[in-house]
Image (cartoon, rainbow, N blue to C red; front, side):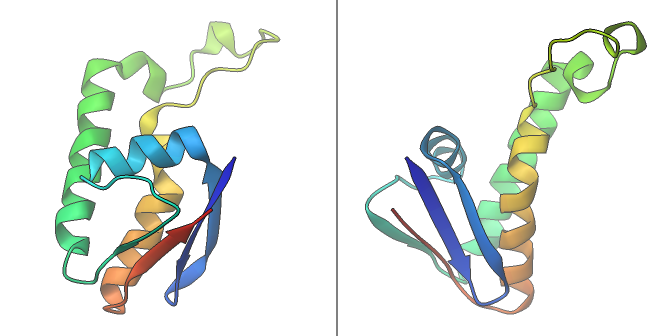
Amino acid sequence: MLITFKSHAAQDLIMMKDLAVTLLGIIGKHLGERGVITADELPRAIHKLEAAVADARRAHPAESAVSPDKADEDEEEPLHLGQRAFPFLDMLRASQRENTEVMWGV
């Protein structure tokens, strides 16, 4: 299932449900059929998400860098939280700059 996030400050962002549940959970929101992050909630949401990304990098530093000996392997490296969260974090920041909300729906 895909979830679409919308903001007047950024292009629509479409992501898989599992990632949406994870990212919304980090900022204290729950995935429903529809939802909103108000302009007033954005600073705290951004702070929580940035902290979670920093924690993930400290806990798994090897996932933040590409290992030269693994670059030739056929298997793809899994994306770490920072890579997966960046587009959403970018949308939140743009929305904060324009003082507008972020909405989502199924």
